[in-house]
Image 1 (cartoon, rainbow, N blue to C red):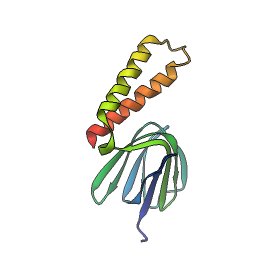
Image 2 (cartoon, rainbow, N blue to C red):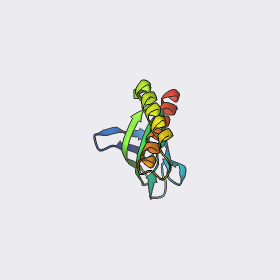
Image 3 (cartoon, helix red, strand yellow):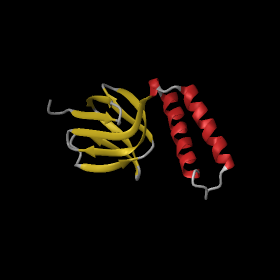
Image 4 (cartoon, one colour):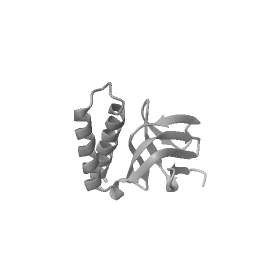
Length: 135
């Protein structure tokens, strides 16, 4: 159909979503950006955050982590390390991951080699918890 925008969200394990949407909002590393049908071609890096799309007046949310977005006039392809739909996020698991990351960060200094990894783990856990509450 001429007015369709196709979205595909892909992780190393699987295609998480494939379908037509009305609009997509992507957490870019340079800031959040939206895509509608007819968008100019674009290649952007994706940050850890909430990716959402609107289809038939219903918003669907995903927690995504690190990757790339390729945009054309009729297609958006998201290639990310992980993507979880809000209603599929295990809140207990995310809470435990948050606690582990916070405990590890409390023991580390910014100069420690593990600090950045623990900080990213905390951001991922917080993102998952935040997106799951919006589900």
